[in-house]
Length: 173
Image 1: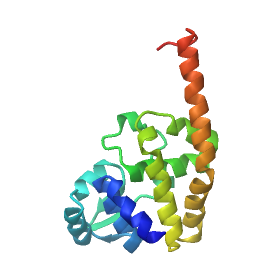
Image 2: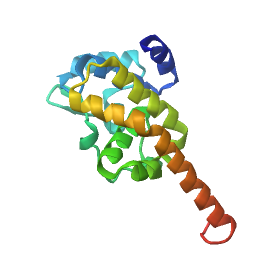
Image 3: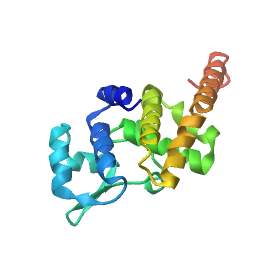
Image 4: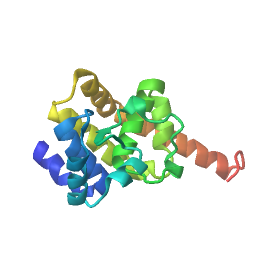
């Protein structure tokens, strides 16, 4: 499974590939800025870009990935400076934990997230399969993996209802 998922990481954006590699080494703990910068060069991104994408915090020579609960509740994929697979997966975890499958489905139904939903599920699988997470983190990734089929189904239903309403003049286009 790990070999297959590693091959699929080539489909991820550079920021997500960086986050996956960093997470393997540090999880959500802080690490040295120099190591983060070196890894960012290898992954064709930058620490500043990762901060701009909302993936990590960088201060006093240390960097760390943000936990889903630390991500901003007002985040909107359509206005994100950089929409990454990592951000989508972790915002889905955040909204799943705080609002349930219906709220997660509303996020999946949004443009941009729809294109990244399969990759988000794979990130959840990758993190869960590695088994190196703290128990709470493992539960969060497992919840995303387990709920994902229902989240996608609800998102499709919401999209179909919205399209039907527009078609019959019930809602503005």
